[in-house]
Image (cartoon, rainbow, N blue to C red; front, side):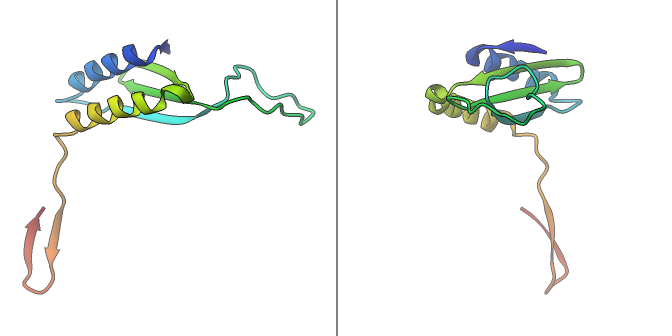
Length: 108
């Protein structure tokens, strides 16, 4: 897995969305990250981190990328990430629902 800075992650994520447009899917995970790369000690003592960060991972077929977003960069990253998602989620299928009173199918 390749750890990238935030801007490089967003540009590679755009490439991943274009690669998976016709076949495949992009899997994105986001979780809280405290900066540790090692397991916790077995005695149960857990040091409190000074700040929590956000770890994002994206996967398409065999290529994986990740980035760490620091608390001071969250607003800037979130706006860029949100606009990237809006621009690349145009291939979603619409949901079909049944109109129970008349028996018609409504496509929204």
